[in-house]
Length: 243
Length: 212
Image 1: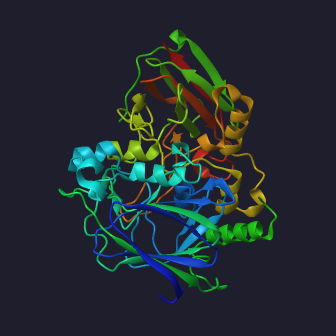
Image 2 (image 1 turned 60 degrees about the vertical axis):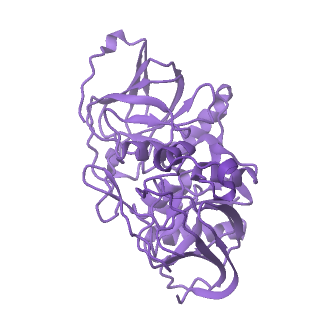
Image 3 (image 1 turned 135 degrees about the vertical axis):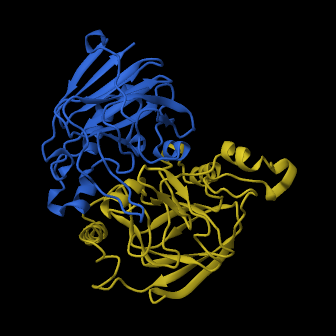
C-alpha cells in the first residue's frame, strides 16, 4: 500500500453499471472488489487525442505476459504508458476475452429488460461501453480489446481457455498509477465466460488518490527494459516533443 | 489442425505476390476462398478483415477467441466480427497454428520492444497507414487499424500466464485458406520486422490467391 497516497475522492459503482472518468497524470485509481467475484471492463483513451487508445496486444507482447498484475504497465498504441499496476492483491487480470453482449446475457442468464425490471435490468458490457464511448464522440470502431479486472483466464497447452472461479475475494483491489492524463471508460458487467447460474451483480468501490512520485528505482518502471523505454516515451511526450 | 486444400493454384481467379514490407488490400466476395501462401517460410502476414458493406464491422480477436474457447487459429476457426457474426472460416491450414494475441508491429511499439533509436524502421502499421491513405475508396482510417491476426506466427501462452514468441512453425509453401461468409475487405501487411527471430530476421514475400 506504500504507493497509494492521500485519498482525494471515493465512490461506489453497483454491479451492471457503467461510468467514465478522467484521471490526471500522477494520480492513482484504486478499484476494490467489495463482495468478491467482481468483473470490471475497462478501456483507456488519451483525452488530447482520442485515437490513442489502450492496446492489449502491445501491452502483452512488450512484457511477454498473458496475465496482468503488479509491475505491469498498460500501454497505448503509441508506445506510451497510460498507467502502471503498482499494487494488486489479486495476482491475475485478463485482457483478451472482451465483453458480454445482449445475446450472451440472454443465452446465459435470460433477458431482464428495463421495462420489466427498471434499474435492476441485466445490462451487458458491450452496450455499456457503447453508451460511455458515445459521450466522447467514440463508437464501436474505437472499442479495442478491453481489460477485465479481477477475472482470470488460464490457457492450456492446446490453447483452450479456462475461466478460474474464486479469483478475486471481498476486499481485493488493484492500484493503477496514471503516467499520463487518461480517459477511463469502465463497466461492472459480468465476465462473458463466468459460468454462474444467476447473473452476477457485483459492486466495486473506486478511489482516486494522490500517487507518490515515480522514484528512480520504481518497481514498474524497472520491471523490464521495455518498461524503462515506455517511461522514456512518456517523458518525451510530456516535454512536448511528440504529439 | 493440419488440413490440405484441394484447390489448384492454376484454377485461381486471382494471384498476387506481395513483397516483404508491402501491403495488400482487396475485397473478397461471400463464397470466395482466399489463400495466403508463405513462399519462403517463417514470414508473418499481419491481417485485418472488414465487412465491405460497413467497415465499422470488422474482425474481432476477442470475440473470435472467446466464442471458440481457444486462443489459436487453425482449420475450423470461425473469424468473428465485433458484432459477433462469422466473417470467414479457416477451411485449410498446413501450418497448424496462427496467432491473434500479439498484434502488429508499429514504429512506436518498436521503440518499447527494441530501442528508442529504432523508431524509424519500417513497420506493419506504417504499411496499413499508407494503404488507407492510398485507398480512400474503402473508407478506412486509423480508427479501423485494430487488433489483427498474425498468420504463420507462433505465440504460445503458458499455463502460468506468460507469452512467448516461439520459433516459427511455418515453412516454404505452407498456407492458410479462408472462405468468406460475407463480402470482406482483406488488408494485409507483409511484415517488415527486422528485430524479431520469428522471421529469421529476413522478411520474405507471400502470395495471395483467390478462387470463386
